[in-house]
Image (cartoon, rainbow, N blue to C red; front, side, top):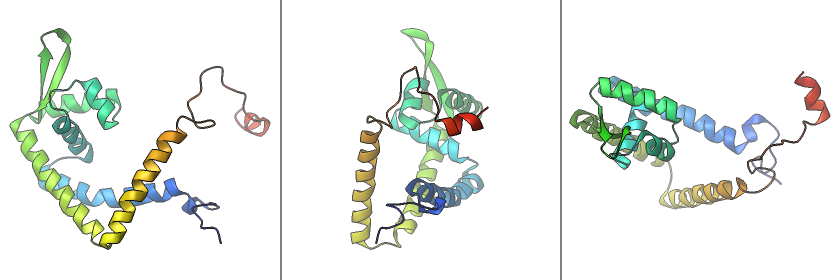
Length: 175
């Protein structure tokens, strides 16, 4: 018998839908603690994590490493600078670019947020045996590698213009 993940019929059968449903549920729990205990949003924590990972990086480098849109990230960084969590320093070699660093306060809050995240991670994986955790690690890595490969293969690879015409059934609906 074929598993629903291998031949999805309903939306609940699709791997990406199930992963997204899990993420929506699971990420809200630590986010509530970030807000309640630290006064930080989930995005604030993501930005602080990106800055901790690449201290002194530019907005462009932080956006590339974190997956946060450059414009959104720029607004977040400005807001977080006003709140005393981050600081911008102009690069001497190119005054148009700024280096982003956490302030002492921002780094301290990120340390607490990281502890909250670690506690929640441990609580989540406590539902699994050591063997299941090892298998899950392997499966997630295999899926990540497969997704990277698929991104370079037709029909999933990014297309260059001119784009092919829509199938007739879809073309009628989009008018």
